[in-house]
Image (cartoon, rainbow, N blue to C red; front, top):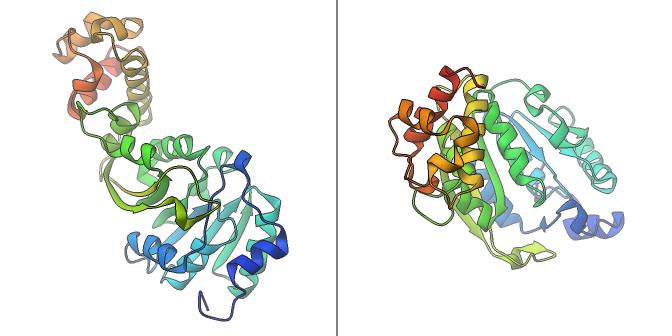
Length: 278
């Protein structure tokens, strides 16, 4: 069963359930079956994989994931109207589609299914970044993350040093994963159309991941460094060790945060841990 298996058209489902997209929930629904099929395909061969989807809404991407070879799909939804929609869809896929009614920002999604597991999601605009940072903290738990964000957020994830979008999110993401912007989606593809383009980012976690203490250190270093990005590092890093930390890492304190490579932030985080300040 799937997109062409006699299921009710998405627009009819939305009308029947009164499922208008709500700004307060950051909702913009993707209804084009061709686009959601492409997004599911960007996750690679899902045979034997357990997929978690956050914010399925009316279930367009959910249907595409169920049309793939994924072993199971777990849909996490907080909107009661969408919960009712996905519950109906789950009845068509007994044993393959599981519905979890929960706030994804308060749930350890890696506990919902066994490995190998992936996240594939059109993330609600208002929680996309905090959800991503949470998954980066536990990147070893995930085989791949295929996530849709507002274009600006996608650019921030994939940005290179010394470019306008480079900041804390780029460092955390690229330190833990291989990141690529793999698809751009115009506003007109959504209902209702957002004011900006969206983009899909593929994040494939590195084989070796930082220990929790080192990740906390990186969060502290990047928060300080980019919190006052116009300052030289000797000033912005003063609250967490400043000159001594920079000297230990062999980094010139006159530089600014946006000029540092990922490897240099890694050195700073490791020195921060070594100093016992985390």
